[in-house]
Amino acid sequence: KQWVSTQSRRGAMSEIEEFLGAHRDEIVVVRFKDHAEDSRSYIREHLGEELKHLQTSAKVQINPDPNPRLGDAITSNKRLLIFVNGGFYRSGYGFNPLSQVESYIGGGATASCYSTQEIVNKLMSDKYRVANDRYPLQVDWYYTYGLCLWDLAGLCDEMVLHRIVEVNKEIVNRTHRPINLVMIDYAGKGNVRLADVVKEINQYNIKLFT
Image (cartoon, rainbow, N blue to C red; front, side, top):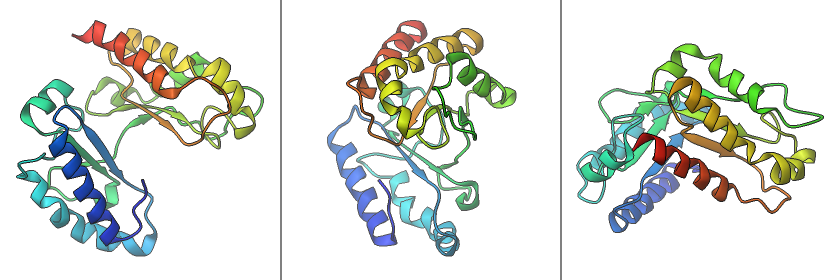
């Protein structure tokens, strides 16, 4: 969801607080990024104060750990993770700078979707962050500058979307870390559901890491 004003942002955070208060096994990740230049100064100065009450809320609290164990987050009721662009970050408020390892490839695929090895190699090129589990590992499934273009969306859905499962297995094998996030920005043309692919990844990882 994109929040375009202070009022809508506060309203959205109130909705999230109420939802997490009513669903004690759920975790929500919020990312603040890509704001218009003229709003950045205001956000930097006021975001911390707007979210400060979530450090002591009885419904849910902000987790200061950028990559916590999910079971620990649920047990401690620190089930809200907030990341902000580096320019908005201010210490002392419990949220973290937005810094992740991404499979983003600037050229964009034009003839076919990227291979498993190409995606893994892109992630592995950021050697320091891959080795440091404070940085989430993110696979980008964008149609502009990611794994596929829109014209290939059907191909990516039907034949290649499951490739994310293989990327996760290869990353786990090489780094002993799982994929943390899958980012997607189009509704594909095929019948394969992203939720089913992510579920398969999660089930595989749970068997290995629990």
